[in-house]
Length: 211
Image (cartoon, rainbow, N blue to C red; front, side):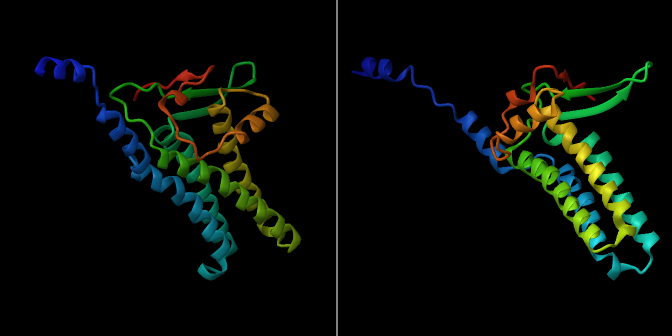
């Protein structure tokens, strides 16, 4: 009887590690500082723009402050938060012939590497998409209210944040250069899906150099 009991149970394997890892990826934020600054600069720029009349009567001061926040947001999202939160990075370079080239990198996930969590991925993509939409709303409100002195600042906000959005969409979709195909493919996916480690390795993407 004892031998039969052993034979019945010897093939049973309980893998608690995978369940724990899945629960951790859904519930935890592994890069809290990067997550904070991913939203801090862009939200601060929006709040400062909306409330600038309360903070200061100086148009130049408000203009420079918002532009500085937008620039800091563009740099941090492009070079830091995207790499840490979703394992993607992009840039555009000009070759010797004056031609523009898009370069994309995706993190190669190793057993020792920290994969992005679902919460981080959601925050990253929601922040990346919603804020440019808000600046587009500001553009039309500025245009219709004839506050043309703010128009240049709003256009700068749209340009900087749309550039990051466009670059990361291309990066996530594997470097596809056709904008219509990229948009259709990207919108067909939901940003609320779990970002699996395998999703970081896209065709045509270079492996991200370890730093």
